[in-house]
Image (tube, rainbow, N blue to C red; front, side, top):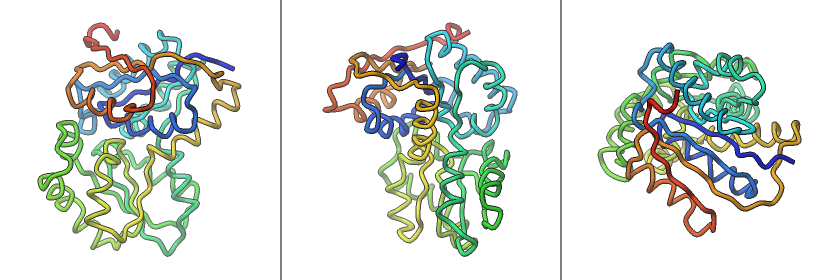
Length: 272
């Protein structure tokens, strides 16, 4: 048993979409989350910049004595996972791409047309394509970047015509031309617009990596005997810019759960 917290981080509030699945499966676990809201979005930034940002944040989480770090960001998982594991060899560090790729490879076959949407950095890396094909080489995969969706989501522009028009701008031709029947939400922000996507494309099946990463978390906890005993305590959410949208999203996740949530603003210079 290990009652230390699990660390999560993302470029902003998107990684919060992983939290409900963990809390439902493992209510005794405690979370320290870092959202780099002052420097979001990550998807258009250079890999060197992403590596520096993620080094800062994982160093911060390691200093908080977390027992595991979950990269709740597809962009960082696609570009920095190996470097982060090398930097912190004694802490299990999980990416979000492999669990989703494994699910796609299991549920799809050569008759399916699989689409992956994500940031420029994620799509450019080819991480989803490479992982999925590693698990099932027979699959047909297309990818496209949807660069404007993350800033809109961070601003809370979700359930309205602007978001629906943006989704159509990126996906109407992509889905129709490639005859996509299975869509991977290759950014943890995108589950926040899953209802919009399903409303517009009701015949397309959705794979949500924010949900699929739970399997890797459970496996890692079991393998290292890291499961927490029944406990009470705080979930702590840090942000480099503690925005109203960030706080509101967390409050929605934990409303009526009885969990204690603490918010902390963190100046960027304090991370290093």
